[in-house]
Image 1 (cartoon, rainbow, N blue to C red):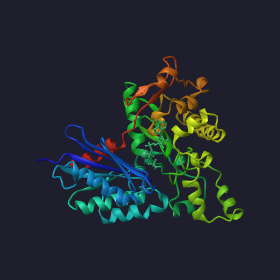
Image 2 (cartoon, rainbow, N blue to C red; image 1 turned 30 degrees about the horizontal axis):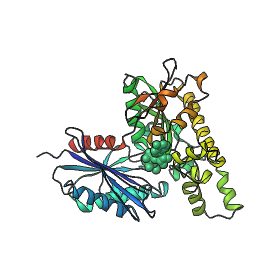
Image 3 (tube, rainbow, N blue to C red; image 1 turned 135 degrees about the horizontal axis):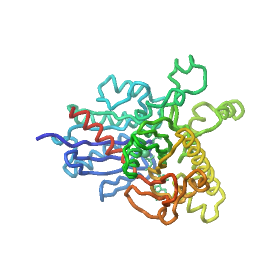
Image 4 (cartoon, helix red, strand yellow; image 1 turned 90 degrees about the vertical axis):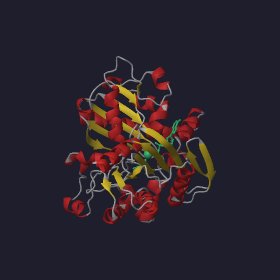
Length: 394
Ligand SMILES: Nc1ncnc2c1ncn2[C@@H]1O[C@H](COP(=O)(O)OP(=O)(O)O)[C@@H](O)[C@H]1O
Ligand SMILES: CC(=O)OP(=O)(O)O
Ligand SMILES: [Mg+2]
């Protein structure tokens, strides 16, 4: 029997998404999600089965995933399993392609924890647990940063002293690369073109959020930087701020570096502005006239618009802008507000098309618009599975 199944673990800062995919026919044998890890009521959703209860950390979450798979006879001991694919958020300068994890690779991923403190530890836990359960199986890391390694040096560099930057590997890496790669290709497909023929702005708007400019299938700029903190306004992260805010908080407010880190990563963004990080809740409150929610929505959309403008300039010619991830795929008000007012630049959204709910890639711009506006569901797990399968089969 040839092993054709890939288990994909996508560990986020507070969730684990997973899929078991049979690459022989593309069938999804299991799909699930553990969310609100570390909160009082975590939720495990495995296909149609749903349970809730406390899941204190990623280790417990991954053990719950293994149990769910076991219950269905699809556990890690299955001989049909070819490999486990792990989303790893930060790959630094070294990892530009999917990589089989050995002790030395794991050490390097660990060394990158300071630049992805919310993510790499969870990814490492996933690798450790899967490896302990099936030591003989290839564990393959697929890096969020990989797709962005094509950025030109002038987009990747910060304008700070070169020696200092180089000594500490300070540069813009970019994240969500698996999603930006997948969605930019799917957008080309939706337009009936090859990736090489089109320039696309991808807006990955989940809990973490980032934009990218993709020219002919190649990433030329992205909004996240050294860490996943830069750029767009996110659920709990500030995105772009004047770096002097940090000095000010230290010198004038007397905060420690760790406190400032926590403030900007976990208590800012939509949560900081209005107390809610779920866009559904923010929009509901804003519609009811809640001032804080209206302001938070305004700040979120204003930042998004600025990046659409910036990447229109970077690309020169834009064929499509694609909305993806939790907010991008589901929030018609965000899409409408972000594109509204950009008609002179060739962007427009058709209200009826925008209000359609669907899991399929689709256009939401009117025929006359010069630039296609699209909603393209991301599929990081499928993209990871394909990259992993290509590697282990080779
Ligand atoms: N129906 C919806 N309408 C608006 N926003 C939604 C909807 N469903 C999910 N979201 C938003 O998507 C976010 C999660 O997106 P997701 O891509 O799953 O994020 P992550 O992978 O970072 O956990 C939620 O926090 C919420 O703000
Ligand atoms: C890199 C990043 O921000 O990932 P996520 O959106 O899963 O938190
Ligand atoms: Mg995500």
